[in-house]
Amino acid sequence: MQKLITQKSKSESDILENLKTYIKLEEYIPHEFRRAYYKDVGRPRGCTLEAMLWYQILQSLTGIVNDNIFLFLLTICRELREFCGFKSIPDAGKITAFKQNFVEYIVMVFENFVEATESLCRAIDPKKADYLLYDLTGIEAYVKENNPKFLNSKLNNAKKIAAKNPEINPHSLAYSQMPETAEANPFVKQQYINGYFCYAHKAGILANGLGIIRGIYFFDEIFKAKHPEIVSQKTDNPDLDKEIGDSTSLAPVLSDFYAAHPTFSYHTFLGDSSFDKYDNYSLLRNDFHFDRICVPLNPRNSSSAHSHFDLNGTPLCPKDKTPFVFHSVCNGKNRSQRFKYICHKSVKIKGINNPVCICDNPCTDNSYKCAYTYPHKNLRLYPGIPRGTHHWDNLYRHRVLVERSICLLKYPLGGSGRKTLSVRTAKADLYIAGISHLIGFTLAFATNRNELFKSVRKLFAA
Image (tube, rainbow, N blue to C red):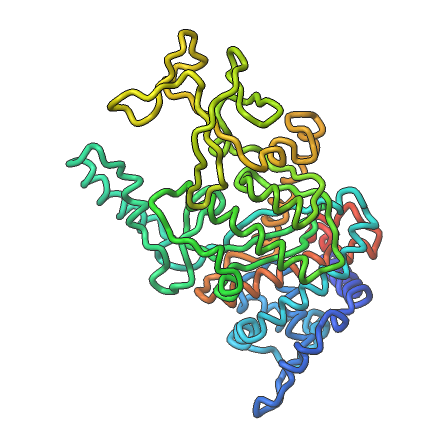
């Protein structure tokens, strides 16, 4: 038993020694952070800045989200206490105050780690490091609206109303009655994450083809004030709320990312079908200079069965290849501009709003034949890589890496799971998890254990 304890202690010492040798934390701390932390506040601070940051990082690496538990661990473990540089153990309130007061500077430390690890990613695999993956996630808040009983009460009331009015959908009615924000914190809004609706803090995550985090963007009030175009009102349609939320965040996130890292360049973008919007293809190709845009087609955004066009881009009848007739220009809220075409054999009949096709050999069962084209439809149909090919499937399978990275940030590294209402605390926890992720990647590269850079926990357990 004593031998086992000795081996475990030696293993912990090796981990801490590697962190001390290869991770020079003081090099990633900006001068603005030091000035803000050490400015005259009336009394000297009891802990150094490096000690507070190492505490946050080690807590994230161990996955212990409860401050009291980890502080107790520091109390009984001299090695951890000396490594952090604590002369006296701070209380949990001081840890929380540090996050809330200096979250903007923690973001700056994270950005410095992103800048430093870009060259390492290119050295490991230049091809995959040239992929940029984007997805959204949410950090569930500790509010009563996330209790299943809250939704069930709304649903039960809706079912009682629907029993008297059969034309009412009780689930749609219950969704419309859910409040837009949490009662305890108006900054916690209803979001669609992980396949269900809840009250959470939403964030956008960028990763490369290696699964290494490249950017974290927390959609708090500061971000929304900077990018007011992403703010949308809650509707009665959950599918529309999700689609608008995902798609509208793309341009602001990429703009901020390239502004923070102007020397970075990526040529392949991967995202899920929620980004399948005609304007996004033009944005990614022309504004952000992606050569390949790997985004699956969204059936809700797909055109009708008339998929054949002439040289002018006019839809053709699938039966006799006769060009359709231009009808109108369609514009809608949160929709790209569309050109509407109708069958050349359609006629206007009194009492019917839409023209009716009188063809003897109709191409579909619907009497109203129409098709839509978009000014930049070629960017969607031909986004730099042929759709439906083995090449496309092989490339798109890398998108799952951003999902895995999000899961790593939220659960093993403790970016989620805290019982807190504070937006700033949740934001700081997510960025600290990102810093820990990049520290693990840097340590794996420095110790020639590249096979473990995707799993920080396995790296420290090895």
